[in-house]
Length: 137
Picture 1 (cartoon, rainbow, N blue to C red):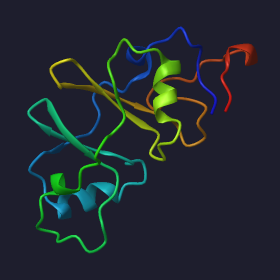
Picture 2: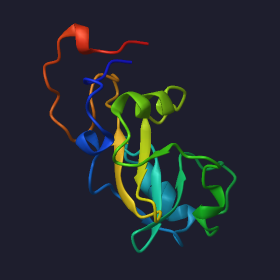
Picture 3: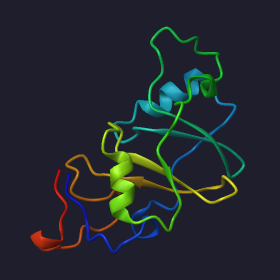
């Protein structure tokens, strides 16, 4: 996985207004949101407070069920001051390439999103970085 220099923090690379769903959304609502190829992780909120993240829904889930029922047990999270290197370590084995950014009150601040090729971050310009500043797998 290639990344930007390690001196950056999550605040430097996060999407500040990620798409969200209300915590009381149904499975049908969530399936509709997941139809978009760029959506890899659904962020469920109550107001601004983070309630859960859903990366997949079982095929046999009832469309009327609350999607919160299928929230991931331990979504990868970070605070804005975490270094990019540490954030990437948390994402190392997460197929969604997404990291939820929260404050200490569990308010959703943003989302770190790796591009499909793993060489940049969604929603941020990809800077030219010398190979010596890149981290590889």
